Image (cartoon, rainbow, N blue to C red; front, side, top):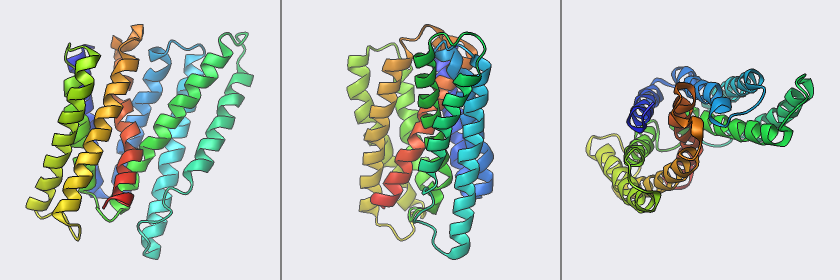
Length: 262
């Protein structure tokens, strides 16, 4: 897949997450699982890992577990009337169990375990990506509500479009900071203009959009610097993982913005 096709996939997945955020946790659950599944399928190819089927199965299992745990926590919090606090309290436990599962997977290998350290490290990194992706399910439970998701996703899409150009990284990095901040600010202002700001003031929405946008610029630029050096990045499974990973990683940042700035 070309960089433009990868950016288009990012745009499509971002649109899916943005729309699903207005449908509640049970609608967000399959959308988040889809993003994590694309990471799971393409991650071993992207990093040229041994025992690829086992790594994919492991990442898929962690994706479903993290998303299901977050959904259960959000539903439970809403039933108690506490929509903000504690809905990601399970994440450290999920991450710890995922780490144990990664070691178990290596123990079960029957291929002589070549490149053992590389395989474990890459699997744990992939698990961190999909666990952070599950935070999208909790984003509508912040004071900002579901409208925060499109604000953050707009910045991710804008910076992904810049990263799809042939510009060198030394140009893409600074431009992404400007484009991401501008896209986040504009999206935050539009939320208020369209009446979706709720109890949060326009100034706080604008500030949150800028912070989220600059963060998206840093994230997407760093991801391009890493993924563009990998030989398999343009094969279809790996390219889909390249498209989905920054969206998953942005989930944790979006939740922090909703909790701390809005």
